[in-house]
Image 1 (cartoon, rainbow, N blue to C red):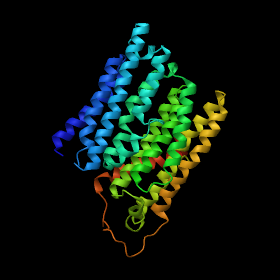
Image 2: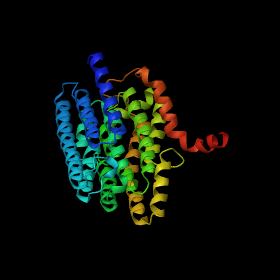
Image 3: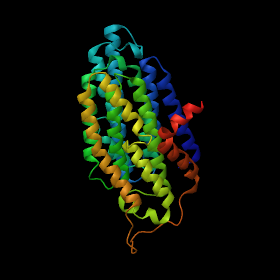
Image 4: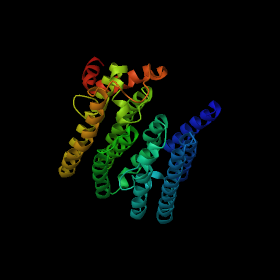
Length: 346
């Protein structure tokens, strides 16, 4: 793709995100979401492969439907209350429609079916954008309207997301699909706590974005799209494979790694709010996700390939991302263990 075109799309993504997260009026928020959708479509379909075109078409249809629902819910609320302010969403029907629309935007169950298919049809870098940057504007809308949302509905959707994200990821061999189901599972953790403590949901999103970026960039630098290729990486880049294993375990939420922090805080907050059964169920459902993270980690570090592999091996990795990968992976692994020391020094 032309560098000038890439620059235009990148600026459009940044401006669309900024418009949405800084707006108080529903029409401006909707405009930012539309700019984002239109900017990411050429990046999804840039390879001109049938799978990429299919992914771009699916993404466009789902996002267009979600944007229409957002506009409809805000118009219904304005009709009933005379308010276009995002934080003044008080009409119950509008709240339900908005919850469904944002869930569709994010890929939260039961509106999650498009996300693994779209991610499978794109490159790893575009998949990274779809998993992190494109989810930030809808998350901010959830954050701003959190006091109006229905806790029961969100809890059901969150538990469904954690269950389906873990269950459907078990049998996958494509790394992009595994990371898509991982994203759906993490969204469940964010959705369950957004009503009770919105800042905690945002913290979870930031740490999820940090760890997912580290995993995607690592897979991109070793050019790995499926588990059979991942099995050959230990002989080429043992240090990177070991780091990938620790980052995946952090993403799974194992202590004392960074990914344990949001899960710990969310379970504590849910217990304080008197919804300990939901906290117990979602904690148990995270064991499903833990299985496929362990499977990825096992393939990356413990499995050695036979000497007669049929596919070509790279003799080096893509260098430009190595420093960024090192910084992100270090943060993904050590942020929680090191934080008491930092607080003591500060």
